[in-house]
Structure formats: C-alpha cells, structure tokens
Image 1 (cartoon, rainbow, N blue to C red):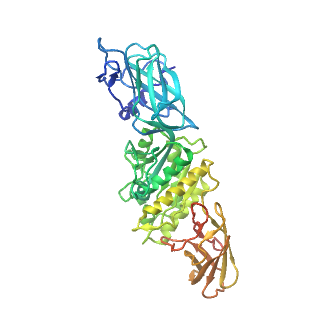
Image 2 (cartoon, rainbow, N blue to C red):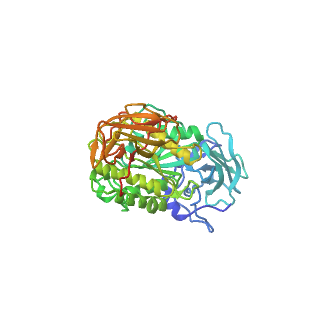
Image 3 (tube, helix red, strand yellow):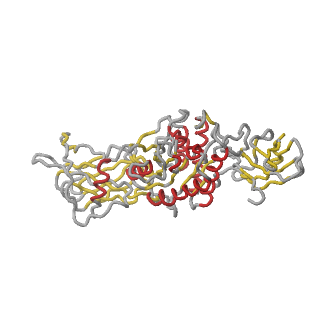
Length: 505
C-alpha cells in the first residue's frame, strides 16, 4: 500500500500526536526515539480522506545491540473519529527498529481484544524507521485499539493502549446558554461512549452538565455509537459586530477570532462534523440595535458562507445540518429586540436548506436573568436529541404542535386551531397562560383560556370587541409561561410561539 504522508498535514497536526516510547517487548527495556521527521518519500499522497488526519511519526535511532521492535502511534484517549456513512478510513502509523518486509495492522475491541478489522498490510515498503498506511472501512462503534506487527516476524508486535472509536461529531457553538450545557446540573451520569472535545483535549463528561449528558446519552442509547461534542461556545458572544461585548462575535474572521479558534478545534478533531448546534442571540438582543432582517441575513451568511464553506460535511447529506435552538426568555429584556431575534432564527430555519429549529425554549424555566435551570437544560438536551434522531430517520417528528388558524366566534370568544406532530392532545385543560389579544393596538383583557377539544384552544375575553382581533402566543422578551400548552407526546413538547398576521402585513 502506498504511504499516506503529506508534508503540510504533518507540520500542521504533529503537535497533537500522542507518542509513547518504543518498547522492546522481548527484553522489556524502553528506548526513547528521536523527533526529527525524515524526508518525505516519493509518491506520497495527501491524508485529507483519513478520518484521523494524524502525521507521520518520527524515526527511531537504532543502536547495534537493539532487538527488533515496533511502536504504534497512539490516538488521544477517548478520541472519536467522524464516520462517513457507517465506517471511517483510519490512518495507522508508528515507528520500528529492525527490518520489516512490510507492516500489518488490525483493529480490536478495547475491552475484550475481539477482532473488529482483520490483519491487513498497511505499509508494503516501510523505511527510515517509519510505517504509515490506511485501514479502510473501520466500522462505526467503539471502543477500539490498534495492533501492529511485522509481516515477516509476528513476534514483533505492539498493542495500542488508548481507546478510540468511530462515531458522530457534533459542534456546540453560541454563547453562555450553550456553554451551560456542559456546566449546569449534576443529575445525570454520562454514558461511557460520550466524550467532549474542548481546548484540543478529549474529556469524559462524568456527571457535570445536564444538557450535554441528556443529549448525548439519548443518542448513544438509541444509536449505539460514540458521540463527541465539540465544545467551542463563548460566553457573551454576539453574531454581529454590533453585538460584540468584548467577548468576540461569530462573523469576525480575524486570525484570533472566536470563529477561527472554533475552526482550529474542528481541524484538530479531524476536520469533519455530522451536525452543528447553534444556541445564541441574547447578546444581539441585548444591544437592541440588531434588526430582524440584519440578524437573519447574518445568520444565513454564517451558515452558508462560513460554517459550511470551512468545515467538512460528514453527514452524508447535501449540506452540513445546522440546528438552531431558539433564544430563551430574557427577564428584563425589551420585547421588540428579543422578538426580532427569535423571528430571524425561525426565518433561517424555515428558508435555508438543512437548517432546523431544533428546539423551542420559551416554556423552560429560567434561573436568574440569562440562563436556564438544571432541569430545563435536561429537557432541552432531550429535545435537541429528538431533532438529530429525526434527521437520521430514527424518529417521525421533532417539534411540538403549532397554530394553524384563528377564528373569531363572536365578540368575546376566539378559537385557535392547532396541528399536532407527535402528540394527539394537550394540557392543561384550563388556566392556559401566554395568550394575548390586541385590538387597534390596545390589549384586550383575557378572562379565560381553555382546551375546547384536542385540536382547539378557546380564548374568552372579559369585554366584547367590535373590530378585528390580533392574537399572539408567548410573545416578547418574557412571556407568561406559568401554564403553557404542551402535547401528550413522550417529550411533552410545547406549542410553538405564534403571532397572527395583521391585515396588510
């Protein structure tokens, strides 16, 4: 097999490689190796199609008395390689002492050493103490280890020690409510196949971070695959320059911008993603000067001209799926700017291909003024996981009910028709909150909101109205969600916010 070495890739990624000293397993003595890269051989081919993107190892210096030995280059513990379809082409490399005719490798399960990929020659002409080649079609799953050996002497063998897998990589970006996925709540325990990648390190989640754990565990329990969450959200970050609160903004393309730091992290993790989750908007709403059109235009450009242009699409779909989590309630915020951001998010989710409104959040409880409670993050994690499973064809729905019509029955009663997606009915039966009726720009006093039937909500006004009514639900910065509408699906998904179009609009 031809060697898979690319000089630029070697220089770019060599800092991330995890090496261990060469171990002569016959005399149990250890010999450290030199770290000088040899000249590239003729006919070397690029590594960009590898799921791992690892560099060539460095050749050891052989002394006359040393016995033959081989050493596989380790991945970082817990590394997850993005699948392409149901498998990944994985780079295997390392160093050796001796004269191998060729080097072969295989993949085994980390816990049992059961064979996953059989022995196959990966380098037919190793030289200068270095071997390198591809293991094609490593099936999705984990955890795995490498084993490598000389073709001409099976006693010269090395077993990898660090576990790794092939699965799904999902970027989590935005601002503090995305960051809190990983930091708020200790109610859950992460599945062993769930890892987080941040600051160029792979880490288990343990019991910290209800949102991330609820999300990842649901995917793993349903799919049986390792899930890696690429965490590059930044507290207080805006989308547009006007919303830069000295924490950075995502449209910024400067060398050390938060966006380029995110790209560097994705590159170090392999360069390909299956999904991107975006949870942001508070910084732009708080500035109060970003209009609905401006935010919508910027978010569409960010998706299509930045994220999808700069990151490898590992989803198997035409476009890298971009999942938008609607901005949460903001106590103390102004209605206009907050509603503008939410409307813009819905617009992008509806009109940009392979963008999804992954979860609505207005029914979830806040703690303080900016963030959700730990239980709310758990619910949010489950909702976003439902969206991923829907995209993967594992669920039939991912959103709650929506309003499909408003009928003024008489001068005091208005019926709101809803369409179910995953449920067939809703609660509560009475005392429903969050509804407003406006006539001639003045609010009408709502005396009662009840369930009329499984598809109808009835609003009763205190006083009769003479003109047309304008109805809205969960509108503004901090709507009343004491008793919101939720369906009877297993996730109790909320009725989505609604604003009736006024005549002429």
